[in-house]
Length: 632
Image (cartoon, rainbow, N blue to C red; front, side, top):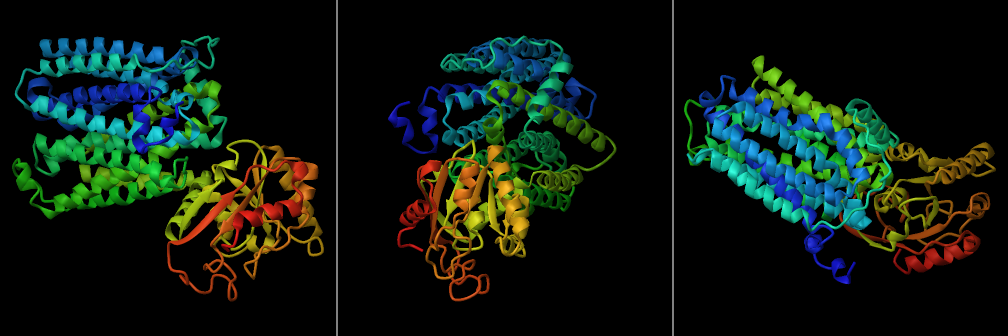
């Protein structure tokens, strides 16, 4: 990798061969899928009598279900192929298949056959199924860890920009009065361009070339889900991703009928709604890299789910208050209503928070999946995505067939989103705790980081740090790439409010030997067990929060831990917290709110790992003191 790749802004990866061709291939594929899909939906929504006797809103959900059904049926096979063969080669095969599929669509328009057109839509779903594990499993092979969030953000943003442009193009082609065969002709041109782009993707050697492909989709699906379930956080992240696609697909599938029957608009109104929603997701995805400081920040996931619920519900309530349209309104007349602008803002924010929700989850699945099974785990993700979306499409079609209004359907979906979020965060507190930590350092502090890259991404290590305030563990949690199990005084462990955080991060309470020798021995046993499991353990060797701002002498607990488990020690130093609301300056902590205002400046500095043999309390104290300097 050239040094030039390290510079530039967020879009620097687009200029590299290891990312640019993949991005363009994915962009053109998403563009083509949505050009064809939206053109077909607009045709059958506004010219239904020429094509079918089905109600347009039911047909729109049927089309959405047909497109995603192959993900459920064939993802297991596609995951095996991506683990067995070079992913760049598979990308080229799938783009050639796309050219053939658009030929089927051309035949459907020529024959005026809805069955052929729906068959082409199903086959486009099959082509996307084959490409799905490639585009996500290849990223960790070609990108560095600190580029993973940015790469995922650009893939997601590019995908939704492509959805937007493809949707606009499809709507324009469908409403232009031209022969519908032009839709398929445009699709063939885009498919050929996608194939040419795929030829630039660098080789991505398979992790399991000896794999024997199991043709049985049922048994292989179950096996792939088993790979995903080996890591609980990965599996629950996949469930979160699947729910997002159910939720988002449900909104997207209703937008044509919503624009026509709720807003009273025509094709231009539908295009505007789709544009606003997809721009929101694209912007939210791109903001993820900046908001997460170029690492996988799980704290953005609950933030995203809150926005998905709040703005989904507000969108539904606003829509319920709109007057029933009596005729088709021109776009300018429709936009004269403040309520329409309210609904558009809700839709934009719904997409924005969707980006915050989805990008960290995809990056987490890639980061924590076993490399040998990564493509098959992503295939399991696609299977569950498809299952959720098919069920969502069928449920939406059923509710609408029974007479439920579209705004009421949105309201039910938003309330279900809140319930799903509570369920997942209850099972994996790490998401919620990272959100609390992320919120704390973004509301109360502006944090500078130096040397935190020394915290290892995997393997056991002991973190040592000076102890300035009650929120020191939360701040360290916020900057660490992975969970830390903190050893802390049992009284701090039981502090009201923040004790919730400490309990759910599996902090280890400790007491002095003269106060509770059994608790002390249990604490050292728990530390040893955690280190042997390859976890990070954090301790504050001073043994107490400073009451003067000075670093207290480091106690010998570090030595005892390392004698039993000789692991690397990572020295860290907190700066700027002395005098904050959570410190003991001028008396008890947490008694004078906002005494330094909000967004006060703090910092954390780290040093390279210290070998166990050199990690004496005195040496570690000298390193931490040097890191902290004069800034308390």
